[in-house]
Length: 174
Image 1 (cartoon, rainbow, N blue to C red):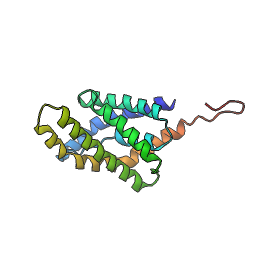
Image 2: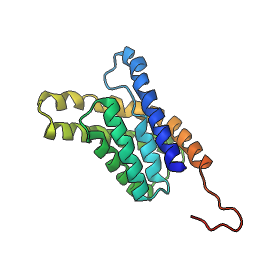
Image 3: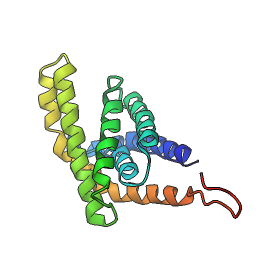
């Protein structure tokens, strides 16, 4: 149930993100469209999700992002899974409970995501100018992602609370 809910929420966030691009794009600030999927991946990482389940969900959501963005297949798939694993490791040390930690986590992971995109594009891309152009978009993208992160974290927390499986008397916990 929870997996399906987070998958549906991620797909909804991707649809919202693609439409947000049209609205924010009118501001003429390159790279200012936030990644709404990134805070969801970080949320799953810093909470109690198992590595296998979280990596599988991250894989599916990253693949959907590849399809939505028209990116080379595997670029965002790899980045979302890597983000989940790193946030899972950081989740032992960090708890995204305050507004400041939510914003900071989203900003740092937004920077990491942007740097990974630039590096992978430089390694595997055919155009030498593209990584330099993408590097200029990393900071505004991370800032806009951090600004939208509390909203996504709040939505993810509601889904998390709504899908808690409490065993009834006489049932064994799964």
